[in-house]
Amino acid sequence: MSGKRLELDTTTLSALAEPNRMHIVELLREGPLTVGEIADRLGLRQPQASKHLKVLSEHGIVEVQADANRRIYRLRPEPFQAMTSWLDSFRHIMEERFDKLDAYLRELQNKEQG
Amino acid sequence: MSGKRLELDTTTLSALAEPNRMHIVELLREGPLTVGEIADRLGLRQPQASKHLKVLSEHGIVEVQADANRRIYRLRPEPFQAMTSWLDSFRHIMEERFDKLDAYLRELQNKEQG
DNA sequence: AAGGAATATTCCTGTCAAGGAATATATTTG
DNA sequence: CAAATATATTCCTTGACAGGAATATTCCTT
Image 1 (tube, each protein chain N blue to C red):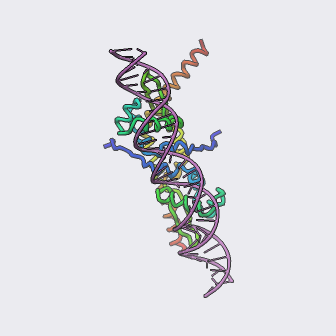
Image 2: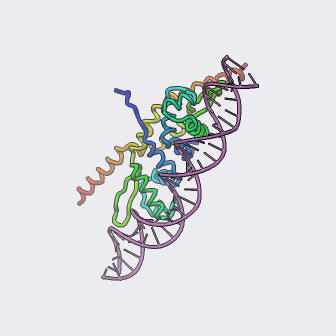
Image 3: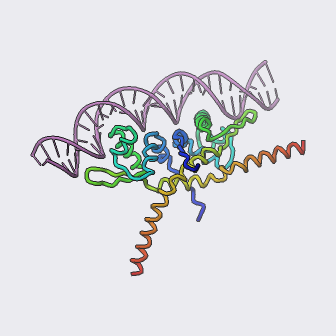
């Protein structure tokens, strides 16, 4: 029951691959913000901020909460959990090199001591 | 010494955001393969396979090993480690329970006081 | 109701990246 | 050396997408 093929949605990655959107995500990591605050903090024009937030929202990376005139955006956990799960399936890849590095470092130490 | 700002290279993400390249990565997870094998298994034309592999290589996602006529491609661990580290900084976001619990407690307090 | 603030949307334009086709560059084999 | 195999590169065309500017929409305030 653990052989589930985890497929990572590439559109999630492309949403995050745009630098301004990545900056938005980094910013929202500290907590929810309104569109205006995001635009200010990142030096974006309001329409561009709204557009990027729309993309992030469409990919489930952020969610909106209406507060009167304003829209408060915050990160959603799901895509990050999905990416984490996906990366877990590469653990053997990541550890393989650790072993090699480890072996290399041991070799170096042997030389130093020899 | 642990307050290092982890910035994830967005170009790594854009390299992985292309579906064919993602498929290549998924395929190479099982082990190294030549260009021809990759093209065959994924139904790609050889030039496209080479092009995608070049992009992956330029971003350090794969590495090449020349074997006579052939080029053997394999995954490199570094970008996956980098992504994992980056995602670690979102661990608090992924603890969805905190948000829900927090919202629940606020609601409770409002009811109590209202 | 009117004006203003916050946000979303539309239209336009330029750029970039992916695929197709052809070709170039090794490298092996006969 | 010639032919064949494996891979890389170039040129071209097309589609997607990001930014700019203007405008629409919604909500608050007075």
